[in-house]
Image (tube, rainbow, N blue to C red):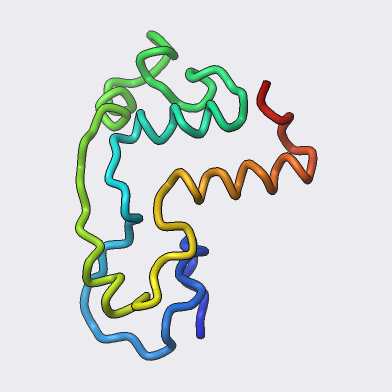
Length: 114
């Protein structure tokens, strides 16, 4: 088995993979701003510190504002069927971000929320 760079949930991917393009995404399509707000809440950080372009104000480029508001949806059915038939370790961004926040809190990198 191999680890896919930048995709820790794909460490269980088979060594031999069919050719072609795979969309890598979790099972919970969400706007970037919603994901960032969830991350900020887990870390007890202000939303602007987590990347909310609207809250950050004039110092944020139009491109950053547009990306924060994007609503692109990616179908991950082929990834799940071919690469990960057993499912994702963290099926949605909520579980994945919670695990990251727990790890960082144990390391002392961030304070627990509250």
